[in-house]
Image (cartoon, rainbow, N blue to C red; front, side, top):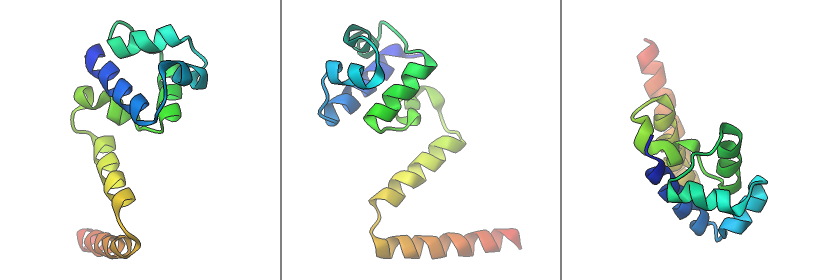
Length: 108
């Protein structure tokens, strides 16, 4: 596991939310020193803390682990979700129609 990459992504996400390490630690019910150690790559969060971090920063676990996961089903879902979130209502209707048509053709 690349602890430094995990910490760097977490740091970037935290700062983009406008949070200090203290603010994130309060949201996750952990010590701010522990948050800084994770961001420095010297500690790896436990699974419950990892989930709390993702929820507090409103990010996908895939974002933090992207360098370690490679291509899997979830990374494809996250990519589609990101595109969906960036789409305008008219684009969403077109995308939905295209997906329905494609899935119907695959079933034949």
